[in-house]
Amino acid sequence: MASVLRMTGDLAVAEDAVQEACLAALAQWPDRGWPDQPRAWLTGVARHKAVDLIRREAARSRKEAAAMRDLAAAGPPEPEPGLWPWPSAPPSAPGRPAGIGGLGDDELGLIFMCCHPALALEARVALTLRCVCGLSTAQIAAGFLVPEATMARRLSRAKAKIADSGIRLRQPAPDELPSRLAAVLRVTYLVFTEGHKASRGPDLVRGELCDAALRLARGLAALLPGEPEVAGLLALLLLTDARRAARTGPDGELVLLEDQDRSRWDQAMISEGERLLVGALRAGRPGPYQLHAAIAGCHSTSPDAASTDWREIAALYGELIRYEPSPVVEANRAIAVAMSEGPAAGLVILDAVGHHPQLSRWPQLHLARADLLARLGRTADAVAAYRAALELEPTAPERDFIARRIRELGTGLP
Amino acid sequence: MKYLLLLNTPDDGLPAEGTAEYADTYVRYSTAMGAMAQAGVLIECRPLRASSSATTVRVRDGETLLTDGPAAEIKEQVGGYALIECADLDDALKWAATIPAAEVGSVEVRAIVDTPPPAPR
Image (cartoon, rainbow over all chains, first blue to last red; front, side, top):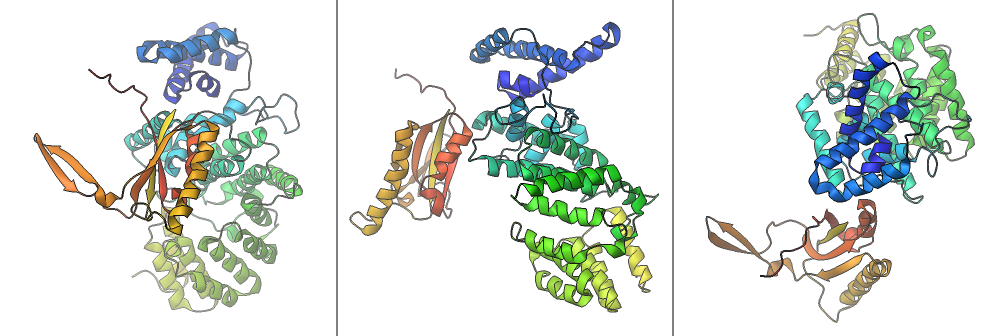
């Protein structure tokens, strides 16, 4: 897709061309057998389809000339690193696409284009899932619980803005890279968090979004091996997603971190995440994703809940506040402080940040307060805090969890 | 691609000529626009008279309606414009950020549909 886009400069044409090439493959490969280089075959066919599409639009005569020239100059299609799935080779393997001046430039350019900060955040997320991760519009709509027509409109508006406003497929200049990369990492992180803990709907976890985010992070890490924050993000996703199987019970109900069966955590993902994080930290350029990963690592490498190093986690959150001065981070620090120094100390911090308007709509704040209040024996206050969380309409498994806790506190729902 | 940069400022109109504020504004804008000219992206730029001097024209059912003042009363008014030509949106955004109006107000970056104006008959 990226290489067709490089040729046409038009996202809509490139997308249609790739789709037609895939249809052609579906029609031909079962009968004639798989080509030796399936990816090169697809790229070649897609390029020809793109030229056809452009030709059909007479108004685009100038682009056609450019495309024909490019195609003629390119000669027969050569094997090239495609976009997805990413090569599974270890970071040191030769022939791996390396970004900024290397083989993976088109792929990176496409990601930077889809995550362009001039696009609305939700448009960036949708476009990246569609054009980079290859999810269908229906899948993306399902992932974010919006009607498919709404998602289709969001995608076409985003594509129109790219074409009309002149966002081009290109690498950010070195001075632009930090801010542009931050936008890409944010999109990847957002896709993951929505998958890891859906904000609405019947399910707590939406695995296809977690998988898409992991693929994206792996791709970025392969393309930008020298960026510690990219490795930090991949480490964070691995260390967190390793717990996926243990996070829900047999009926999809929420299982708290402290109650999870740690033997069901994916040890391969944890050790890969740890390895990546250690490598990233060695660069001496810390950042929010490395800190988030270090926090996730504290949990994932702890043999049981009781031996969690909450003092270290509280310190890491304290460090994180320097990068993300948000009440959510402050609230998380409060929880860690409560775990290491007792619920009263944590409650002081929580109550100090609890009045923030952003935070009062965040169910986790009320859940954390409720937990601390219950530990302090303030049962009535704890129940009130649980009810406040219920009013924010969390996902069904969370609702059940809260109802259970209220029952355990011996009050019962009215 | 050509872009029209709309310079929105909270202050309506230029400061009075001869004041220190006028001199300061002049220097800051000359520096920003001079850099664009130097880079070969600037086509033209001008400040506008105060929005209080604007007249808004609407034609409804064949009748021309005139309103004293700008089309919309908002906190920021278009106080000037720059027409530039550069490679892509990223370049245009970078130049937009160098204009003083971006610090106190905003700069709206609009891509121009590249059709030539109709020839005089």
